[in-house]
Length: 291
Image (cartoon, rainbow, N blue to C red):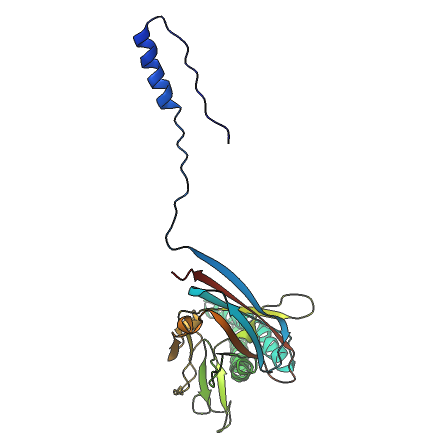
């Protein structure tokens, strides 16, 4: 470390020299301070639990060790999938709906322009009728495609769902999801079927030229929300802007206290058999030294 030095020139008058010396010394004081010490040291760790592990609906398990008492943590679930026929159909219907929407805008504009003419001819009236028929037909195409796409939405969300459970739990958790049955979505599910809906992994964006899609779900281990197994929704809700805003979610608040120092096992399931998918999971924890 370099020391800080200040030189003072001698003066003819002793009192003046002493006065100037005091001023110079005051101006050359070192204001650097040692870092503050804390009585509650904390440190963090990121544990890689799964790294692009082939999923396809299989039960995946991994053991990990926590070194100390946890004060906070995040579980990062990265799900990857490759489109199948149903997912490609869902995307195709979406593109078709966008195209029909543009067509409807054009038809409505043409109808409005002809309707506003003050000197409409018989040909104009015929054109308005013809355009109106095309508009009605296009609106029917929208209705048909929306019905099919909504059904695909239910089944694809269920196909690409993720569940987790800790240690020796016998009940798996579906974070940020709800249960749907045939009462909620008549015509989409049979009477004995139940779907997990809301996680929205199937709409993940493409990540590379291979067609792989990926999305991350981040869960706060101090409190996260899952599908309530005792509740069945009477209807399928609209997708909320926030995934934690789905109705009737069940809060999980005991993982922080259960993740004690020592060995644990995390179980994960993603996708379904025969559908290519992978999962990566990381656990980020903040420790506090015991004592």
